[in-house]
Image (cartoon, rainbow, N blue to C red):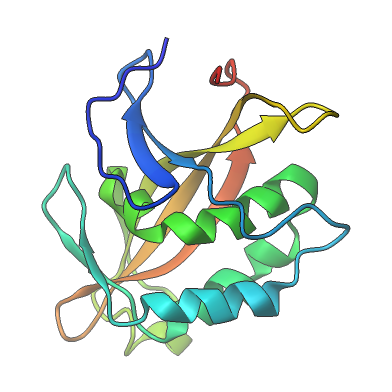
Length: 182
């Protein structure tokens, strides 16, 4: 049974708490329809609307900023290029809920920066957080029959200016748990 303990409506995207008490971002705003391949350039253009935004992680009160490198990394990273099927479709549609995915981030983990190419942009290392979201699933007649839940890993860089910046969302994968009912 679904219960909503946090209601932060932003159109067709909202945050709920599932039966196990975990937060899930429900994405009903499917901007990128199923097709053989996602047009990641279109996704990148959409993500540019987030540049300059700042969102707080509810659990840690940390402010996460979005800079101009995020849309390209999200849309064209190595991780994105290997996605296929439902996971690719899910990542493309999760792009409409970036702020909410940041808000519900949990399980913060730190790692040092080990790549020279990131020395200036991630001077103080990287943080990773878990996040979850649900995408509606429909039967052959177009009726909503429930939601598939996906998990992902937010990658946050700790920059030279001391701020935290969203860099990408990796490891988008459908959860094997029971899907949410509609």
